[in-house]
Image (tube, rainbow, N blue to C red; front, side, top):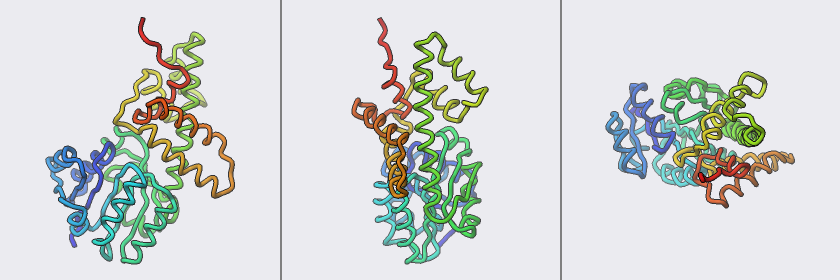
Length: 293
């Protein structure tokens, strides 16, 4: 087995992450995706397009997954399990169910392979620039082995605890983000109806205690211009991640009223046809855009 890197999932985040690995790692990169277009683009950058999961797994030492949901991760896991071997490492960059993550780790350990949860945070631009934040669930020894690879596409790489801790941390990151974005949407709507220009409002808030990453990115770049593209972190995906947080809260016996409220807001947005749009589109539930004329 070579020291090649395998990469499965060339979507909105996966393609630029894989590109950084091709450009910076100095290793052979095998890539696989069901869509032909991103696979062709990555191959043009110098990656080798694998024809199947089995081919990718058999030719890789470390395998990255960058998939949209737990359902996709489960499907790929079932595909790689028959081929995985002692000494290989699988790193899941997506946000997935914690219990499922720990089950995958246990089942791979029975083959002598390793499963590490390393969900990513920040934007597609950060993925392109190699400045993502990554939250890792692993032992200190395992973390030391994979951190250099992860730093080819991330500037902040945090060991959060043992298996599943990376997922817990990322899920809570997203829960706080979603609640903050809703607060920003409410503030912008009030400002607009009260004679304060929304862009000025957020620029002013960014100079004080209300400043946040969400304000400068989701507020300024999506809510104020009313731009919610389809190839971005959708409301459907946001609801999926929020459901994980609510599940963790329920397991702990906690009443997460704020998160439950955001769940109802996401469900309403999806019901009104906004499921595929960038999730700050929930601002339109508060203050629908006015048609010209």
